Image 1 (cartoon, helix red, strand yellow):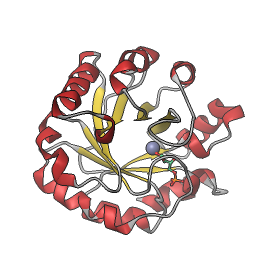
Image 2 (cartoon, rainbow, N blue to C red; image 1 turned 180 degrees about the vertical axis):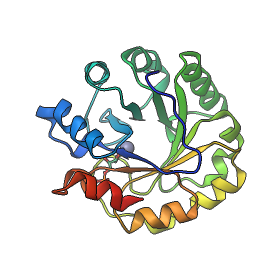
Image 3 (spheres, rainbow, N blue to C red; image 1 turned 60 degrees about the vertical axis):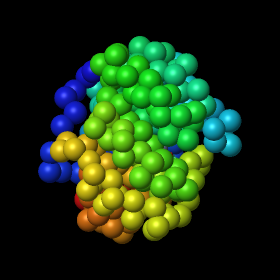
Length: 222
Ligand code: DX5
Ligand code: ZN
């Protein structure tokens, strides 16, 4: 792992490179780093779990060489257990997989243990239709919970307010130190809703990369 992941009492911004210029990723990442970002959110999609295909292992490996920012890797894929080792070896610092991609609780626990066995932080994500109570039993084993506030698959969608109401339920049942991240439709207004409800990491793609001033956009989220 490149840097210590520490989030006590502050909000971590994780710009999603899904909305960046893919022909110039190194430059796009340097620009958000200079603008104050500490993490980079990498959206991995397989065309099965979600109806889109994006980034794979070789890109993460190249990004690892290009930046010391935390690589916050969001796996929107089926069979996550098949890809934990390759993404861990490629240099991911955080691997977040989907609860809905797992067969049962044992499967969820196996993937969490597998991620941790590589010294990588383990995250579990829930889609908009999944109730937060379904993941309560895993909270003590996790480093991060990702609450999706859009249907995963594409950037630039509208924030789903109902989903944000899951945040306090998770926070109330979470051990100290659990990172609660939100992803989808985050801008300078929806970010405040999420942080006031207990989120301490915000993913933002189109809001940051679609703005003319990355620093102003990042500062506007907190
Ligand atoms: C959507 C992805 C998001 C996406 C967010 O499936 O998981 O990370 O990049 O994009 P915005 O911030 O534009 O909603
Ligand atoms: Zn994402």
